[in-house]
Image (cartoon, rainbow, N blue to C red):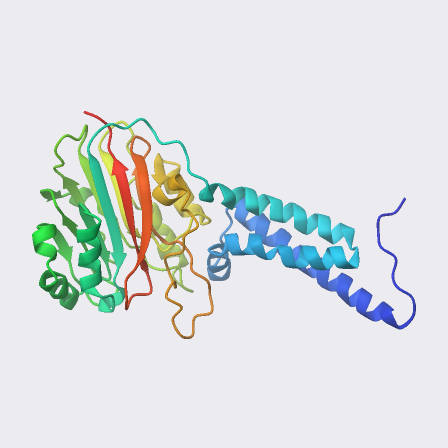
Length: 333
């Protein structure tokens, strides 16, 4: 027995056919998007940009599913439902906390903040450091005036050990720490923006803590090869060596292949580990002219020996990014 719906008779036949054509067009689009995401294919800017919104595409599947059900168009309904199921299976675990490793070493609170080329409010950043007892802060889009504003707000008393690479607009980055640090130049990726790497002298840690302030170029049209290369130049995890932490604006989500390749070396995403992996951090202030929903591109990665005890995101007035604070427990000595 055929499962295809019968076309209505008379003058309504035209809209029924139009509805069928629309549904099959939507189904083809969902199949293409799902195939690109599953296969990790990112041939150019439109695909890279679209993949950042994978969770929203999964949610948007409800639209064509409802239309197909109303029209009793069972075949396109099955196609879209299958794609939706795949996408949900990929993104849903990010909202579920994972079991942490049995780490019993010292605690480390890491914060990252993109200050939007100096637009972000320095006093808010320093207050977040103070209130959350942050041990290490990485700042992206660090300019000379931002360095001065952070100092005026009291950052030096809280995090006196610093490796700062102030630059113009998006070029600068820096690390502020409660503990003594040393520059680890050999770990710094080759990049268009500054990405300083340091070694922290953390009392009671089982291994040296190495940290990189991450900020590859954004995946804009014409910059995709550079974006991909800079993400792939980030140092891999070393589960048998130094404890590595990568914190910053990755300009990538978990739906981008280069970031998943980095995680596969032995890192865990702090948001994913705590069930906060869908919390948006960019375009979260709803700036005029931006109709796009927020996506999580600011993140903290740690190696698999580190327990992630908590993660929170916080608004910084004047910036188009939210800051991220990760509470970590390092391996025991």
